[in-house]
Amino acid sequence: MINPSLEIGIVGAGGWGTALSLHLAGKGLRVDLWVYEEDLCTTMQQDRENPVYLPGIPLPGGIRPSNSLQEVVVGKKILVLVVPTHVLRNTLNALKGFLDPDCLVINASKGIENETLLPIHKIIQESIPNPLAALSGPTFAKEIAQGKPSAIVAAASRQETAERVQSLFNTDTLKVFTSTDLMGVELGGSLKNVIAIATGISDGLGLGLNTRAAIINRGLVEITRIGTTMGARPETFMGLSGMGDLVLTCTGDLSRNRTVGLKLGQGLKIKEITASMKMVAEGIRTVTSAYQLKNKFDIHASIIEETYQVVQQGKSPQKALQALMNVETTSEFTGIKGLE
Image (cartoon, rainbow, N blue to C red; front, side):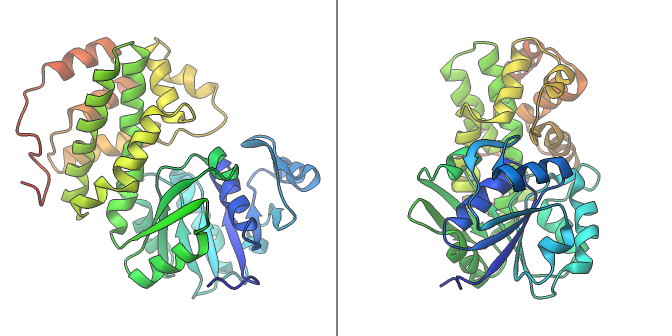
């Protein structure tokens, strides 16, 4: 059971951070929400709404937006991190002086650091010694904020820690499952964004449903090859943070990464696309990490290869498709540790 007097800090007031705040406030918990942009914070305090990242959904009194990291972090027993991967280290350095040593830190972001190729839990472990968990799965922020039925997975190296997160977030509209495969859960949630861009490119080219299904399925194989090589369990990628999140992000109209791919397939350049986006499509950065990981471990991952070439090297989607169709086929699960 969760103590109703428990105070929670959430660092990051994008769509997902705001949605998680709304979800926990709906359970009667008080949430201090760190808002990076000072002007947005003032607007949220006055208007009780996040007009930039989650417009039209009122913030209840249990959510307290703040521009002060110290105010949000000090005294908390649970801290949820929802910040982009490329600013995570700086954020951790800024908050660690305020952090209680026994505070449970929950990562709710998805990404792989370009410079080190580390998943988020490894970055956190290098920065702070706190107990750690992750929350991942097929969840669009808007639908969580609206209370639509959803499922997600809480992962930690210790089962009891995962169950603690499960108890915190589980409701009659959000069903939380547990996992002790922290590496697999985070990699699945991160790498699927690359495949979502690839699927969007295919849809933007008008290639049809057969092509979409093939990219999703073979993309999952590539994700699993990388994941199992890095120590994850193969079955994790059949679950919510693997296949579940992959299907949602590759097919859902609310997917920012799929939208990036759609526009690439329709002929726009990546700089044009990102210039018009308010929220980060994490897959644009993750595609570089995924490409580097496949090269580092000598993994066959032609979808990741061609998506990288389109996004980061300016290759035309038509030429990338041609290259994919010329790839030599193998046995279906070749390269997946534990299934070979």
